[in-house]
Image 1: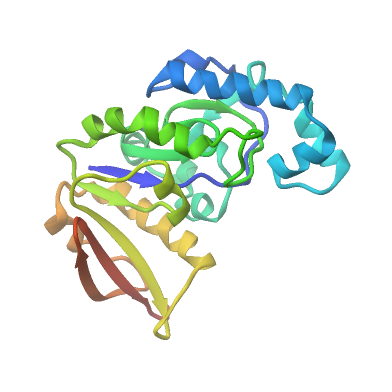
Image 2: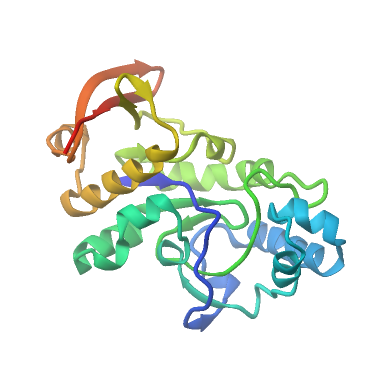
Length: 245
């Protein structure tokens, strides 16, 4: 099984080892081009330009992020570096070691800066607002062009769960059948809290490790009831109603 996941705006600062750009799992040369472009942009851009890049308004926060050299920053596993709602509800550090190992090797995170990451890839702190370009450079388009073939092969024989936010479909289009999830409360689609339920589903997947859809359907997700399953081309969507505790 392989699970596709989104990053988060929030990230934990600090870590253990200095960033090694050549240690990351997927295509290196293409990514290095983006990383060098990003660092040069930080070094040579105005506060106004960086405000847009970072999605920040406070000058002290902009200056702090401008002065970061990602190639000298210390790292954590990507799954520990990101610090958002979905990651809080996953609570990776409280998982059993075997469940952590499953996440490390089977979760693919779509990073706004790094492109494709396995959860175990060690990355530094950085700031890049979702959807931002580096000047005129379109990051998502670049990664889609340069990483798709490699990811196609990586996913070729896998059962796929897509838990990404919709924005990250710009980075990669899945070519084979896969499963997504939608969450309803009182019949209405939830948006912000969908992140929390993606994290909770990921946590259960780490424990149950389903190898196909039949095994996935057997998982009893707390406070979620399957309302409907729809099929559109190669996407099968499980629609869950959020039920009271």
